[in-house]
Image (cartoon, rainbow, N blue to C red; front, side, top):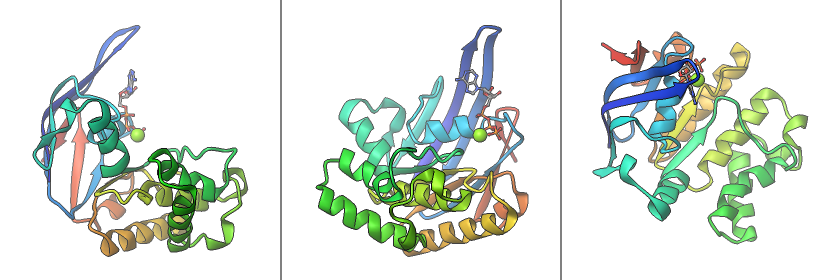
Amino acid sequence: MIEVKGVTKSFATDNGRVDVLRGIDLSIERGERVGVVGSSGAGKTTLMHILGALDRPSSGQVVYDGHEVSALRGAALDSFRNRTVGFVFQFHQLLPEFTALENVMMPALVARKSSREASVLARDLLQEVGLAHRLTHKPGQLSGGEQQRVAIARALVLTPRLLLADEPTGNLDSVTSEEIYRLLNQIHQSRDLTMIFVTHSESLANRLDRVVRIVDGLVAS
Ligand SMILES: Nc1ncnc2c1ncn2[C@@H]1O[C@H](COP(=O)(O)OP(=O)(O)OP(=O)(O)O)[C@@H](O)[C@H]1O
Ligand SMILES: [Mg+2]
């Protein structure tokens, strides 16, 4: 489903060029749950951004279902980012001025669904993630785990095929992390979804189908 071929990523900084990814090769099958681990600064978020077409590789390719993602432009790129991929960010990135319901509705509204349809979709998802009683709370009125549930619901509203979760449990205590992990698994089981999950927790990663370890910008074997 996803083929990552020789992906490199370098950033230009004031102190010269930083080579973050140095030739990532990866092949991910449909329906797989892949854990991505590696030390802080290893390039995990950078890789996730490239997989989700939020950023482009400096060289190499990401091929999704036979299409080269790095070559997408315009409407095709928007569609891939918004509809094919769901993103749960390292920091939840909910909009603080909007309620949980509105945050989850947002991608559907941007995709030009009617507000009625967006609202139905968002309510169903918030119910599925256990937040039916928090629809009108704003992010600042929610716990960290609840905020992450909202972010998960938002990522799912356009029924993506690929869920990219960047340390969804990073700022949570171990009990809440376990709940979020279970929720993601439940979501994975009930949908046709491939899931790539960055985590600092080795024990959590080991419970997924496969672990990919990023070391020095490469996939360690
Ligand atoms: N836009 C950028 N410009 C310059 N350097 C960057 C940029 N984005 C990331 N980097 C550098 O790339 C390296 C990898 O960053 P990245 O965020 O991918 O790490 P990470 O593995 O996700 O770390 P963490 O576990 O702390 O989230 C870091 O050293 C970071 O400073
Ligand atoms: Mg990161």
